[in-house]
Length: 230
Image 1: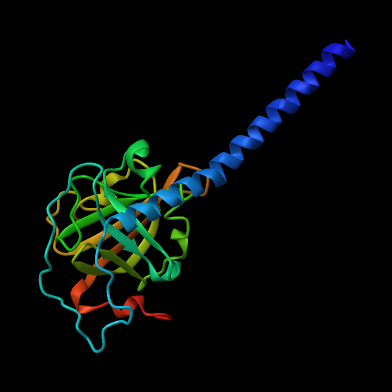
Image 2: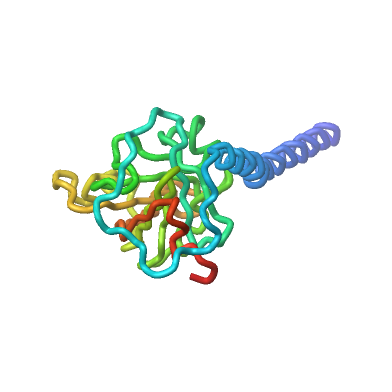
């Protein structure tokens, strides 16, 4: 009996160690690997570096902005910069929301069929809140009025947060062209961020909505929203 109990005890210890290693891999190592890859993806875009200092005055444009055609699945076509999340926050935005191909590796995914940056409609994005470099980890810190800045190779699109809310996973109308009104024609250019809620659970979704405030050619400089302390 003692031999049996000893064997069971050793087995439980081994299982406990394996579970502990899995947690370390899931919560830390996936961040390391995905973070390196996402940094490489941004660097490999090869885009011109904008002026370090924000443009002076009010060069913001509020006419109809240029809009990219929808890219193929797996193509990185933009980055997201969120001033509230710190000066070093910039994550790639890639077409598609599949876990293996996009969310677990490249970070932020664009829901196919939703609007492109600057387009009238709902530019809708998904990202992890924990693990895999957790691009939306601090999503609950966002407040109405915060800037969400999307960059393509040639254009900055500056959105302003209008609301945050928690919904059930089946409430897919949050990414409709007019959120909450799936049958209504869109009237403005919007952005929506979606991620799991609460932490370490997929029971609900945390949703952030925003509207396009203005746009700016990258060649003209950097939006004032990205100035230090803005």
